[in-house]
Image (tube, rainbow, N blue to C red):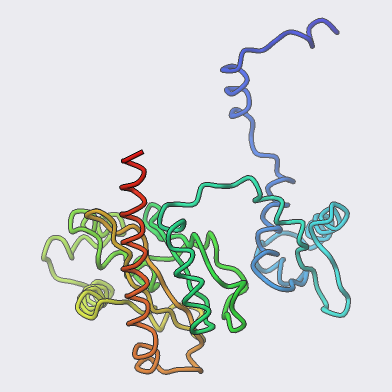
Length: 281
């Protein structure tokens, strides 16, 4: 029996064995709660229960485990749980930022320094855009606690609409087909949802920037976004988010759009130069 434990298993077989197992339920639950905790400054057990749909006793056990591991703290004065700085160690080994984030980080930070509102850079992933970089930590006025890795729709959110409106026609047709907007491609009679998207895309393309659909949550804030162009494509989108109570739409457009567009052009230029340097090397 002891000898059998020492037998070497080929790497390929090991990988097949690993992927054949079902996910460990307790681990999946822990990760889900940790993700939810990371979205808010303070989370109560009730909040976690509503968001994760897990039983409260399970949530308590997971929180106690995270407390003992040092990833979570429970401050009675704040009436809830919050993540500690130790969570930073969970992403310390990730260095795979897209090129648009690598060259756009400085411009996003500069936007927040100028306006105080948080800036975000998003890239396409399947049929949504995903926030890859955010200056929320640098903003004293952020409507959100965390947005990195947040998925946003292409047809309602500003960062998504800016991508859908300005990406190459062939790519746009594929995305519209995948999203189920087939009548927009066929020239057939449009339903209300299709009419609204068509009008929205035309308006965005004409004015050069997008805004979040007023019906999309959270309604207390708004985002203005512009495309970031690469070689014959859209590399990503750049947006600035603010509270609607601070500015109406006209005021925000007058205040932010020109600077956003200049920042986008600068990111595109820097990306092209970086690619040229890489090709030269």
